[in-house]
Image (cartoon, rainbow over all chains, first blue to last red; front, side, top):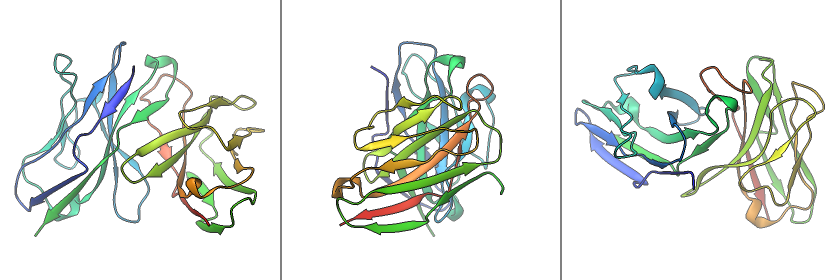
Length: 111
Length: 114
């Protein structure tokens, strides 16, 4: 069955500390994974997608097919990174843009 | 209009009442989606539409219906609201297939059913 798992509901770190938000997936096809972010009082928006292999706002995420993971990392957290982060899996390859989301991790960066 | 708009922003509703949440996009995206966001459960897909005139059921469709008469609008109707439908509802749109797969979200509607 297809599934996205984010084991941490809340991750609290101090400013300047490294951050890793965990995401594991279960999918029989070729996975395409995304991270979406929701800042306070803002709408959900795309942060990054694995096929782009990009770094956005200092965040990176590498798809590890062996471990079926797509963890989001940042070496030095900033207070403005505090937000809800969702990992998402695209279903059906390129035939559809339906996504299934994990339960989300709230990142709180303390000053 | 820029992007996706949703109305109302929030609503308190008595159980048993009928309610329609509105969603409009101006990006000419073929696909649209409705999610509910609940603490600890994340975003769950209610219904979707790959193109005008077609709709499909998502993960949690019971108690909800949708229609897609044109490309821009995708209303979500609760025929007879129940307290378990208290949630934040998000509408999103994307290209139907291919491309980068990015979904664009509306600002959400906070619904409370008493």
